[in-house]
Length: 249
Ligand code: HEC
Image (cartoon, rainbow, N blue to C red; front, side, top):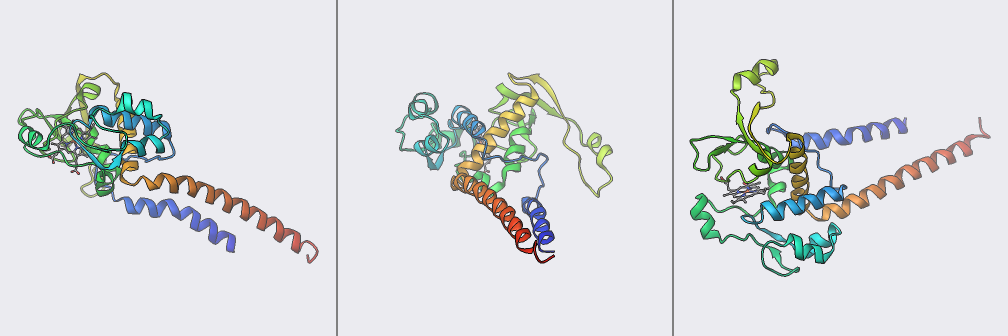
């Protein structure tokens, strides 16, 4: 009886997590903070493609180096695009006023962006830039319509155009008003194949989730140990119970 209850509770855990996600964006990102290589690639990508405009004002280079086990020399020589010291917080390279003048909007700090919007949102945002000649930057975005952010990852992704809505609807029209995945068409190839680009954006999203709550990394490894302990303990208790009751039956 008790065992069934435990099993039921265990099975429900991912469900509650999913319910908290609340997805209104087209793509889902499976956050994996246990994948250190992915976090390292994400950090590199952030420094190369994002830190020109966006700061991470609550994060220091040193913390990233320590948490992700990146040697400090590598951090300093390869990843620190902005001038600064290893103990500094991460500041965008472009002065705010300059950025405002160019984009009409200052690029926001991204320290807490993944916490504010959720991982699915970040992932979808970075996947859904599409060509739109009516925009000053030449692109628009499905998640943030009329975004002021240019398609900075286009060298990797290439350019895609958005196909019209009706085509998506004929597939998934059964659920009231539900849209299928948006249909994009690559009109100019980038350096990466579409699957490689999605993987790169997944790394970047992982990294931004980590940045939003670096303590999660510690909790994650602790959580794993706790679960292993609980499983061992359950097995032990079960064997003990069998041992105790053997003579009674
Ligand atoms: C050339 C400057 C520039 C670069 C480089 C850049 N961005 Fe942006 N980004 C912006 C601007 C400007 C906005 C504000 C857009 C708006 O609000 O319309 C923005 C907005 C965002 C937002 C929405 C933030 C929020 O909380 O609303 C996210 C997320 C984001 N950028 C992620 C990234 C990532 C990840 C990269 C690196 C791949 C990146 N950006 C590179 C200029 C830039």
